[in-house]
Length: 222
Image (cartoon, rainbow, N blue to C red; front, top):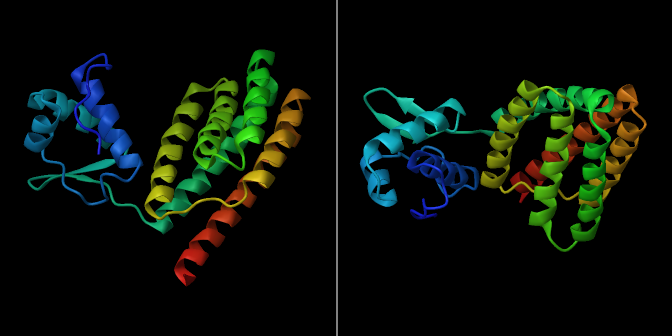
């Protein structure tokens, strides 16, 4: 688990928030684990106010839960909740893809091309880097939608689904086919064909969800 290390951050509260957030998303802080303010203040070498402010931000993102008169806990998450999160995230990303085809500048599409090429390079040898690039690909499409509200919502839902996949050890086994789908989506974006791009994004999300449910079933059978 990350220790103090607040020096690179603009404020103490920002540092506490970023480190705790990563600990939760990466599963180092477990669902249901209590987060005591005094203990956290000692860990980070700060007073209570920055801790309180950081926890308030995490609560706003649904990553922690404040139970009155009991304390603050890392939020629980279930496979059923994961399915619901992915359902909403998929709908928003499909819309974002359609809007991206209509609104994104050429420079953004060039950046998507660069990411797809790098994914091809690391696809079989560095799964962690591939996962980072995969998220970047979809984030940039959301940015290209020109709708910051949509992009922020997708980013929040992506964090929550990423956390569940880490906790349940769910890893997609389809990176090669997934990146082929990325290329098809990119071609539709470059052609400024919003309907086709949205259709391809829908198929991509369906295939990803199917792979995930198969991973869940394999885990249960194992």
